[in-house]
Length: 273
Image (tube, rainbow, N blue to C red):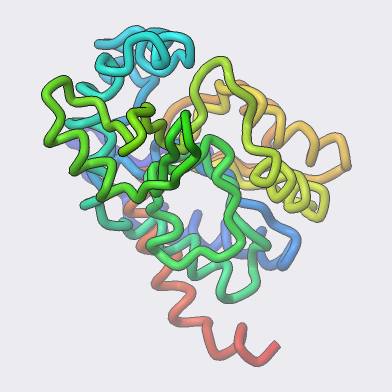
């Protein structure tokens, strides 16, 4: 386990370099059998607000009122007024160095895919291909009455032009973004993709997540039960710290930048495999 900040707040880069090498060596030992599991901490450097930190969204809003399916159906304006400033603005967000690092690892066949709890589309924008968005994505929505599919831009425009800020279909039905609300099941197709990755992995890397939300928090436990390993890259503690082979308590942006630098240096050797 490594901590990177001294009393003056200066990052010990030599420690990040060392741990980045250790991290890559672990991935290479399991190459092609590694699943990356990401949470909100991966996207906060892109300006995406997190939910569960002390200053996160849930410290200001009741999560059940905000993302409860029953409340959405009966009072959609509550969600949409929030979404106008905190969800639909994700359309303009750009992937950060962490997303690009994960995509690079996949392109080099060091990992077999990404499982994300994030709804912000940033892994896809960065180029990740084998991607399971287990909590859905803000990329699209659909009318709850007729089923018509709407893009994010269409939902944003409908919300902006609606007196009560609710996006409605031409048929009059409420449009629901394709994200998972409390009270509805996870997408079968996305869960199947996630389980396929997990079952074929001997290592799972939990990155930017506190592993507090189920069933996603159970994914590392499946790998561990199958005699695999868990690596955690997260500034805060998680519920599975005691089960991890390696823990890197590291600013994700600095860590990812160093990993990318090492990958650029070692790329010819990786490409020759």
